[in-house]
Length: 285
Image 1 (cartoon, rainbow, N blue to C red):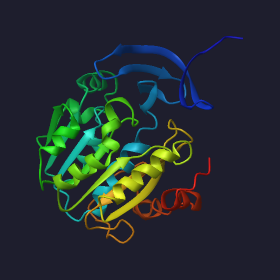
Image 2: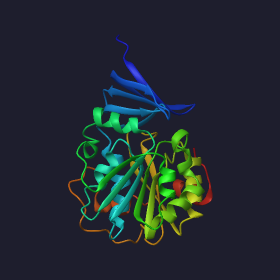
Image 3: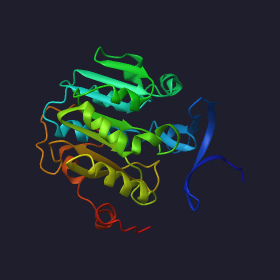
Image 4: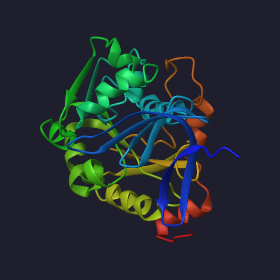
């Protein structure tokens, strides 16, 4: 029996996701992180940062559509958007589809992620390959970038890696305060916040930190196959609009693979174990 090559992301000491791979395409250590790009049999080409699966060509829309369109569709007039992280270009691609958005700033700390994504993930990074005038790409520290701006953005999207290494500072109260100051009076921030099953402490701690800074904080989730346990959470911190009652805009881009108007509402309907986790600090797993 032939032994297949595999790659594994370990969610913790007891749980991991292993994928069969057909080819290792690229590997390097940058000043910020270890980058791997492989071809997998199940999900096609896969980007791995510091051993953590980031995005694949076959399932990326389950993540990129949900982190981008849910906050943008609940804001009545999003014109200026900041993306921190997101060097693969997937979030920028989705944000730029909104005609009402006039300026998109993408700030990623690692320029190699941007360049390698343009080379190896053209369907995800196509907006970086042929950028519209409204898209501005910056290589640098997203925390410092946001701190230098006041009362400017309508939506800030944190498309970061796990809260270790380059992404660690993006999961703090200090950063949320800085982001709040960078937002207009009715602005909002959305951040990917890990699995509510195997990374419960992170989910609970981010919710608590955002609640200390923003008057309205809601969690929603999507199903992303390459992420731990498939269920992946996002947190919205809002100055004015409550995702549970906000009117959904009618002028969103089409077509979509995952997102629709019903999901805009249903993704905020949380299972009881998640409510217990974020509101009461009860850990189930």
